[in-house]
Image (cartoon, rainbow, N blue to C red; front, side):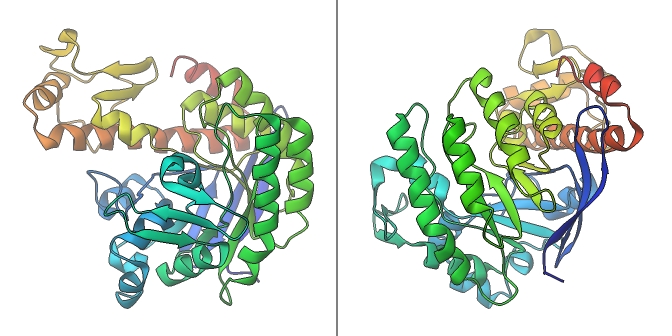
Length: 366
């Protein structure tokens, strides 16, 4: 049996949404699942014990950033990223492919790889598919992502096609570089173009990846363009492997993607918005700095009260942000992560129980 594999437990009869179980060397992940983003080996403002208490089973870290600081060789000497960050459950690492796009002003790309200037000190870094997989192997993570080229939005069809072709060129090189037992996920590209997405899905699916991801979504395109890409592409991926939608995390976007057949998600939204004083509730996102909360002795919403933060009032949380106290960002982050943990559990339950319509009504305003 492969070190990472997925099994389907049930399929929603009305939507086609899938409930499953992803097995990793560091435990089982109930899917659909959301991965908090710990780019540099930490989910900002919270610890591994917090994430465990919230019930998260998989987190995401970033190959590019960890390779620069503290360095993958040092992490390997610590016994791997799990021991380094004291996290006992699963870790997936992005390959650095997103940085190919986001650091476009600091890189030069070719068929051989990507030459970066470090955002830390300007030193040159040459990231190839082989080196990306090697770094992830040194980090000792459960799931390694292929190095791909992620095209931005907007871009021309020719640019999307070029990024897709380079992703295809690199796909077998990523796999060939993997250590024995190192699980690697493939990535489908193609921008907003259905013919390119189909071509990419057919090409990438021929390789024995442990899972498959839809990349190049949520890179600036409007929602009305994102949804058709996800709905079209997800069913093209192998039915017996886990499907991962990279970088998508708004609650409504998650619900849409699960309906389309997606199993895994990651996004900085719940943690980043928390640091910008925004809380997720069933009635939408709340700005805790608004004056209406100054004298609020209870929570911002009775239906979004979680054990990790229930002792603190909305008025107190507003005060913390106003005073610049770090505890404010921590409490808001715990709140948002708890909201997402509940969302994913209720999604899984709805798939099993056949209560999808009630679920969508419950999160209609979120």
